Image (tube, rainbow, N blue to C red; front, top):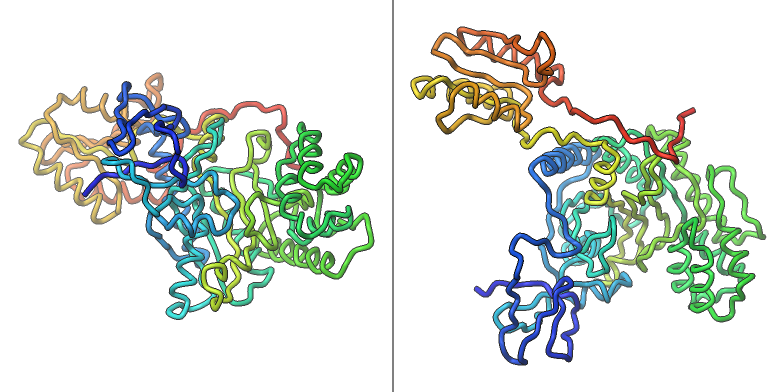
Length: 503
């Protein structure tokens, strides 16, 4: 079978060159393109590598997220890794960012592309199999997404997303709130102590644009421009609004952005113009989302109404949100999503289903948490206990110890498989950041050592000794019950200029 590569467009270039992640590839038409690389240890721009220390943290987060999602009623879904390019281009507004797939042997572009989010394939699955499913359908999906955009800080061409969605024939605001709360719990399981959720409704944004004199056929262009608004780029957004909506003057555009700049509780917001029934209905929907989220345990101060939040994808029809780590808002959103009532029907007009879902950007989240010293990078492995032995004569006993910890307690154990002196084994265990070491000196002498004790402490040489496996297992059961095997060594967080004090 021919191996494949990814090209940055679904449209084959007319020239005899192709650009592969910043490197120009020249070839004769009809011949095999030369994708050989000069630096085999280099990294294509827009992609990330994880060291063992970093991957341990990411793996831990993914395990935690699965637990949270399943505790809140979501079940796993694993879609295929590729999709027909025409399906990916059907909706979403990201046509220029879709990666196509071509064969290395001849450069022939296939009909397949790589998904730019986790939602399109969910909609396709519902459209195809809805008659075999029970609704509401609550699913989570953790996987890679791809976007052929310019790589910048915090924006990658491939990134891990953790999605949750609820699909039903008729969704309520309570479903929106359930997703919001589950997303916040998921972030907390990844070490995010506090986050701020900005929320809006597309109906509210459209009410503002309609009041400003923007016609309905220009709503999408207006929403895309407004979605780019940041504290320092108002004039750029004004210019784009005027370009996209020629009937809008610069003064009207600035007034629109000013009117949409409210931040605060949804319950305290009032429209600065006579509201329509559609606008009132959208605002009432948001109020119910807020009230339900509070009942489910979210602090009222975590959710803020942001009328100028619109999101960039075309398929959103109702609630939209973006989530920021409190005190680190300048580093960008780490989770987002919203309501999409027409997406499934775009693939099967007989499948009338509504959806709501939110996505945690795991790659972006890790970047932010690492930059702020909020992750433990002292460990290179998920192993909780290291089991070694003095000589090969004790190897059989070491296996007995390792199996007892694994089978009876579910402890993650790394068993020594090479010959090392005791000192070297302890150095190895310490360098990998494994919390506890167990050394079998002979059949009736098993020593347990806490590797986390600082070397300057008098307790550094302290260890527990057992003459049988069962007492050791009982002791380790107690350590596990008290969370001693999973303690994270988080550095002191960086001071930030936009840090907030919780009142």
